[in-house]
View 1 (cartoon, rainbow, N blue to C red):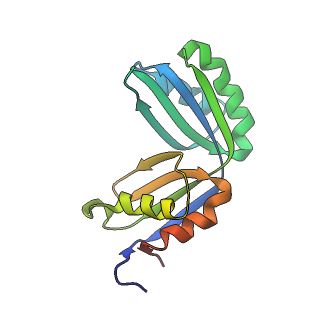
View 2 (view 1 turned 30 degrees about the vertical axis):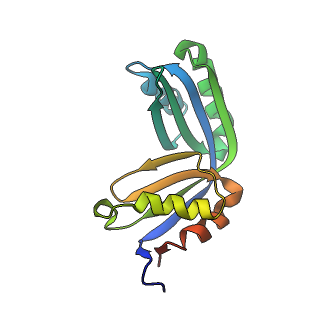
Length: 159
């Protein structure tokens, strides 16, 4: 093993996802709650969530559900579009979540940069990013998971 690689506890891949994005809804209190309650009311589990607010104070919520729940999730969210005043609902099948995790990630600078460098070196576009103190997770095209893992292994030692 290359001693310059960062030790990670592992790389987790979930290839069975679909993404749904609520785009350009005026930001307000309770917006994410309404979206997630609509899904929860249909007993649909959300496996990834990220939200950001743009300069025009519009909220963008990207979430992932299991591919088996994709049609039901769209059916639950589409009726909310006018109520949320969202500009659009964008969806995509065949999405994967790739996560790199390690015990000392919270104390090591540039871990996320190494993840993104590994993905970029493999020609992988990142659709969304979410992090925690020990994990960097990215949404990517589902068909590119194997290439993404190879790119990450250039920078990380994994068991």
